[in-house]
Length: 253
Image 1 (spheres, helix red, strand yellow):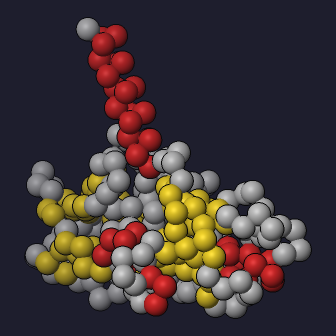
Image 2 (cartoon, rainbow, N blue to C red):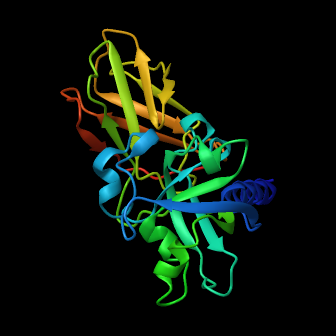
């Protein structure tokens, strides 16, 4: 019985990982924005703010069409993107983190499109061909989901500006693995009840209740595979808006 349980658990974990680490490539198009060697936008429609200006985000950010943005629930997902023009593109793919949405132009009418930072776009070129590739404008690419990796970083929760004891808003940072968030809950001090948070925009979630009393435990479930993280008392009793609190936990299935 124990052996059967272990086998079933392995199968579940493998299937869960495959849902994110998709080995199949899908067609899309890509453009770039900002300065030629730039890092892209300052958080954009996901709300990451200045976090995208520093590693591990730096030069790896990208905006996507609504098909992949998913109303903000696609924020934080990681993709490998590869150019198809062998005359100017290398065989390597660039890994990008979704931090923004491009709702119009190339990204409209249900198209699957990546609008990458200038630096990320140029990295798909052969040596010395960065400028030539950027001059192409829109290009054909293939893409696939890939697990997000943030070496040396634990999952963190930023308390958004304007949060009070009656309106608490959180943003997730450095989410390894799936990268995206499908639901989030908080639990107050001395309580066994998890309170459901509401997705408001981008990667931001909130709860209207109160008065809310910290410390708060946070539980989130990823959109892609349903993996769950429960961080106990990660936000202290004396929390402050605009502060970021780091958990000591990793994701588990």
